[in-house]
Image (cartoon, rainbow, N blue to C red; front, top):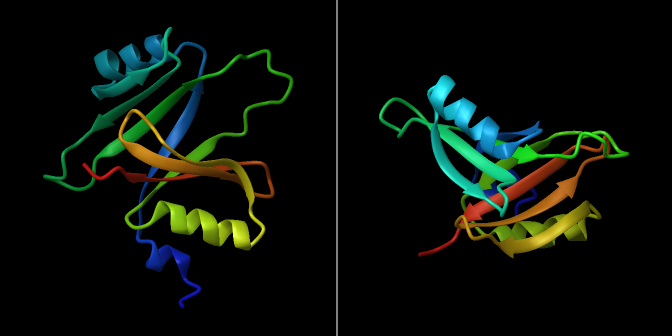
Length: 135
């Protein structure tokens, strides 16, 4: 069995996550001012959104996630990177667990069509691995 998990699980695509004070306002700004399209907005009231631009006619689309954070939180925001996985998200989670990786969220199927889990790397940054749900 290959130890090259990136190749075995077909990592592809990265989506930066930006901390914002107001997810709905930020989504409007990215859409109306910067020329992105609203991909989804979640929560009641909205607290998480993703904007995108592109459709693979000239390269991979650009996605930016907007996560509403409380600016008075005791621990400062460290940021998050979302990495798309093309094969077996749960298997990758199991492999990381076996390697002693700090798992901060176990795999879960999200209403926006992804199955994802998150880890924290030694400097405190979160890496979220996700794959599209079959359907």
